[in-house]
Image (cartoon, rainbow, N blue to C red; front, side, top):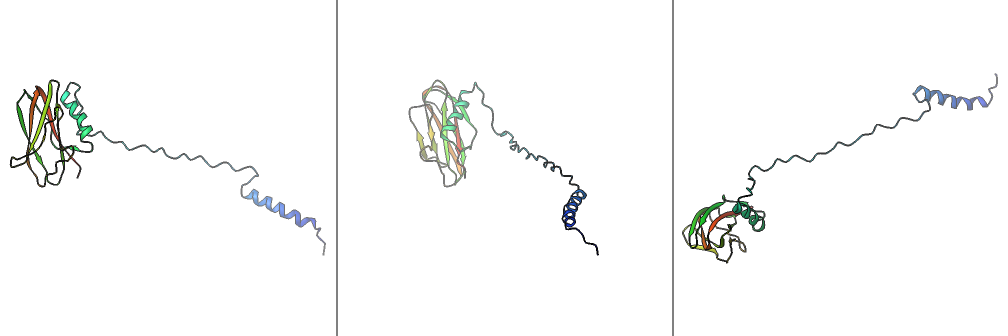
Length: 179
């Protein structure tokens, strides 16, 4: 039997490995880098503007003052009534009805326009008894500031506006705390 040189088996292994690599498609070149994957751009959700906000008229002093006072003194509260408006002379009063829900808390804000130097607010319960008053000498009375108005049961309450000094336009609005 012929003798196989010892060198041959050593040569067969690398040649076989080279043949195997070539058969698998590796020609010895470096593999191409994987494709770059960019993460999708996340867009913030589009929030439509609120539909219940009416833009303020720059010529509406009472409306602007009410918006300012509501920001200051009724933060987190929502309007429970429309903005009641009127015009009074010194010593005159105007009454408005506000239905207040039991188990909720409220704040009532008044604003006077230029020419109003002392505007007062009074709140009467459904049977006509006076509950609160703000008779400070200013044009911006607030009921329920230090202690919110939290009626035990629903009812029609009377808000009275009195022009103690000065004359002109005013506005009054009731705000409700979240449940």
